[in-house]
Length: 240
Image 1 (tube, rainbow, N blue to C red):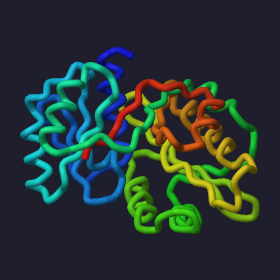
Image 2 (cartoon, rainbow, N blue to C red; image 1 turned 120 degrees about the vertical axis):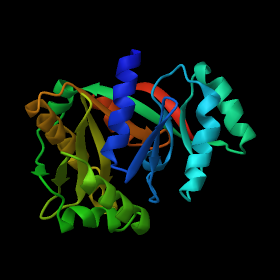
Image 3 (tube, rainbow, N blue to C red; image 1 turned 180 degrees about the horizontal axis):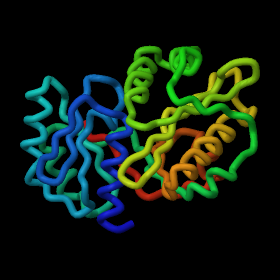
Image 4 (spheres, helix red, strand yellow; image 1 turned 180 degrees about the vertical axis):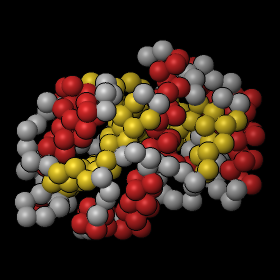
């Protein structure tokens, strides 16, 4: 992935979760949000040949806004100096997460299962985030952030109701998949695959060919994303 692709991907990643304010400091995006979504409250570099000289200013910006400093740092050698500088600030790398990219055509053909597309999230869609198996406080933050995502569409599936949900965002030449959730009692029925494919068809309709998602390294959902054609671009950790 070239430097232009990395920058557009990082910009799309942040805009999808629609933080109230985003600063740009020394080649870094610095989103400011008091919610629980890591991407909405952690600084990310726009290039993979970073300059650590902006780190002090970013740390100060977070503290000035009443937020703990946080960064998303790819696990590649180019960031060795950045990691050393963050360690001197008392931050540690946590929560390894995989950035995965895929082809929209393959995603759209992944499943022909039934799923619905909503232009706006409804109460049943939001209820999945707030229901059994999920932290309701975190769920409320995610519903609020994803509902603000500009131009997003919302997927829903389930027999006789909404038991699984997801979101497709659009920006900077990329589509993104976010907020994939299935109620514990409805797992293993193909709902997630049906939503992924339905979102992929929405991406096709908008003429977008590239798609990304982010998933924690330990999350078993990685298996379905692999089958849907997503491949790792890099792994990052949140430095907090």
